[in-house]
Amino acid sequence: MADEKEMSEDEKLAAEWAAMAGDDKAGADAAASEGGIGDQTTTRVLNQDEIDSLLGFDEGSGTDSDSSGIQAIVNSALVSYERLPMLEVVFDRLVRMMSTSLRNFTSDNVEVSLDNITSIRFGDYLNSIPLPAMLSVFKAEEWDNYGLLVVDSALIYSVVDVLLGGRRGTAAMRIEGRPYTTIERNLVERMVTVVLSDLSASFDPLSPVTFRFDRLETNPRFATIARPANAAILARLRIDMEDRGGRLELLLPYATLEPVRELLLQMFMGEKFGRDSIWEGHLAGELWNTEVQMDAVLDEVMISLRDVLNWQVGSRVLLNATPVSNVEMRCGEIPMFVGKMGRTGGNIAIRIDRQKKRKN
Image: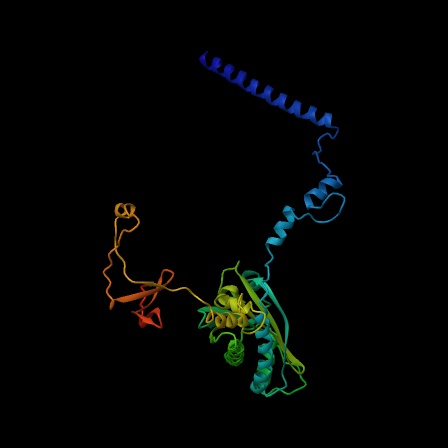
């Protein structure tokens, strides 16, 4: 009997749960039928104004809004290029020097040209390097930081072909899909050393620096010299050897150029910010003709304020100075000279004996 009672209670509880589930399903079916779509899911179509609002277009103008969130997200990936006028002069000098040095290095007619100078994030550049390529890491000794020199595959095979006696008029043979041999790496390393020597000479008029070859890598991950989000200057060079050639890319992080940033901001060599040498020379010359007032201090005594307040007409102040005591000459509060007091032509004069040493 007890078991039958328990079974009946369980059946009642199950019936209640089934009824509740049925009510929920009926309510959902009713809502669907009211919407007129049956079992299909509800979708909302945005009108043109809502689409323009999401994309950041101004109403009625069709132009992007400056406060657009999407526009801010897109622009956050860009790097604002700080124009460094003297750096462009340095790269122009590098192009001229490389044209001569590479001609001597390869004994061939070499033309070097500068394509562009851009600003890029270091991580984005590493991901955009077309492989296979050789990445040369070098160090700026005086600046205590690193740079990157990337030689693409076409230039590698062209240099190897020229240095190993390849005939002119024939394009360099490319064998992709294999690692670079020791001979190819050594020849490219020699070329990189020549380029770094020219780069050091290009910076010499601005700031003496020595770029030392550090290592040669073929995997961009092993050539990481800065954080991925750090900004860097990228100069793309084109090297042509008649019908052969390739690209050479020079990357210098902003952190590497920071010690000479003020020099690179100059508009011309030797510019002095906020200073005019002509005006400085004129001011220095006129200062010598300036009249200043000098005070001769015979002696100094310490008197209490009570005694000073009791002074009256005819009161006397006793000094410890004698006719042969030293007299100090001051310009404002600054002591200048020490001398003896005397008389010249009816005027009281002071003969300067020595210059007063000022305390720092």
